[in-house]
Image 1 (cartoon, rainbow, N blue to C red):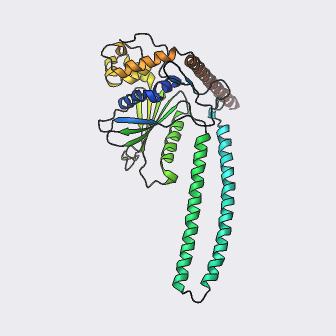
Image 2 (tube, one colour):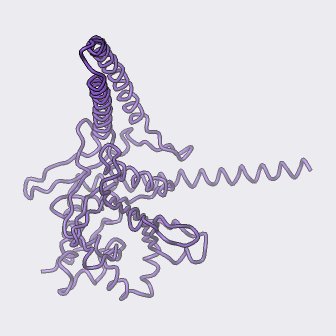
Image 3 (cartoon, rainbow, N blue to C red):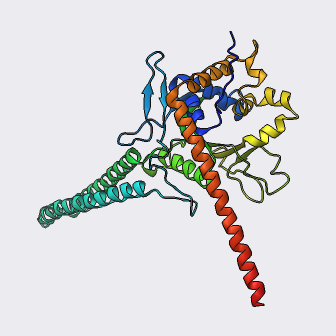
Length: 385
């Protein structure tokens, strides 16, 4: 029987989106979501995913509560309003003081380790070199053997230095990834397609003005972490960064005002040719408000071609409450109803909504101040002339 109860929470809010699509038991929903919005062909269709953004040791970024009756975990995310917000609204930048301190600490320790290990190795090699020099000075050892001995010693020295540097880099990356705060709005997955292709996919639901730079950062970080020790001779999984916005980003051109889904990749500027970058790096930007406007006149097309986008905008649409409704949407609605009935999640939801309203209010006030300052400067210049 279809549950016709009204959904009162928005699946397009970051905390709801992550609780709906970011848990293991709902991964079939995320697979269907990705195949729909990315318009993947049958061979490239995603058949399985593995979540990568697990809770990290030593952080309180992702907290969970266990529901006794169902075993369903609620991802509580950052406790907003408890001093964990890292955004500076005065200058629009992100103050990652804790992350920077952690990184500085790790690098300091590693530098000391590097100097210490280098000193030990150099002392050892000094002893070995002295012994080798004494050996090759013996007249009975011919020149060819002496050359072979020196070659072996030098190769061994280079190999040890390479191994030492490699281990230090591995340890540095491990510690930094272990300790750095996880973005509570990000879903990171590794996906497998029917064609046995592996994809790295990052999904971010946000309201940030710095979204484009943030997307590039996450995408490049994923590419880097996919190459063991910076070895790019191996196969690098393709990266897909999906940004879902509850606001309009591109309104500067008439064309930009009407395109709700943009896809960015690497292409040669003049020929528009990807030249070896084919699908290596893709950033998708989905503007939900434009889809909502499009749906006013093209409801049937939206239901047919982009049902998940329709769901994010309006999970109460009649399309999702019919006997013919695909099971994934029925299940997704049930999940939302479950979440809105959970007091812990509802508290998180209300707090997050309040925080976003405050963010928008601060940004609006900042823009008004900038406009006022610009007008004052313009008037001042006119008086001077």
